[in-house]
Image (cartoon, rainbow, N blue to C red; front, side, top):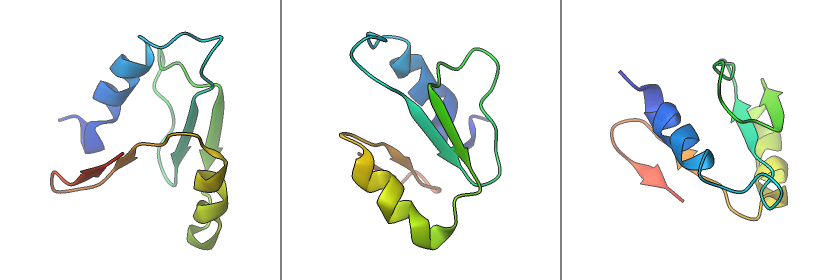
Length: 71
């Protein structure tokens, strides 16, 4: 099972031009799989600091459980 649809999101990332888009992966307890294009990885970001991280992004994709997604 594709946990929180991360694999599918990184398939989309592969279509983006690397010189135009910087890809950050934020996860509290996971690590990027081999083959993911990830320019910056942030792990164990405290919950209260996540708004700062998301505030930096031009676009972000939040993958929520139970089929709920936000872009």
